[in-house]
Amino acid sequence: MSAEQRMRRDMSIVDEIQLVSVRIEGQLIGLPITSVRDVFSITSMTPVPKADRAVAGLVNLRGHIVTILDLGYLLNSRRTERQSEQEPMAVGVEWLGEVFGLVVDEIGDVLSLSGDSSEPMPANMGTNWARFTRRVHKLERELMIEIDLHALLETMSLQAA
Image (cartoon, rainbow, N blue to C red; front, side, top):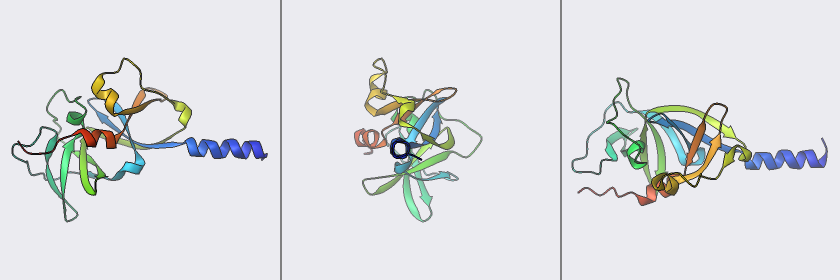
């Protein structure tokens, strides 16, 4: 392998992006794998009275109390109350030293994408999505919106009313 080929290979490794794919209301969303601690199903959740509608409740996750947030409500893309016969699935993320669970409709795979599979966010995207979107990735059959979780979590207010 020539020096130029090694340099191209090394640059493509650096440009590689790993995302955990999830779905909210049918939309494919990518979450940076560096922000995701784990994935878990929610067997029992305690509601939080007077909390923001994005707060789905509290769970005991391996001996720790974890606040569960509905990613669909955080993104203002949840059109209906989440209904499923299956236990809800959540993605565990850490933010400001605390662990949160983000409820999603469906959890997919970890995708390794090259930097050239993405484009900046389109100018005509809604303002709410624009604040939290890093870029849009072109996949074989559909587009995936990569979310900036830190920007999203920084803007929310979790104080009870």
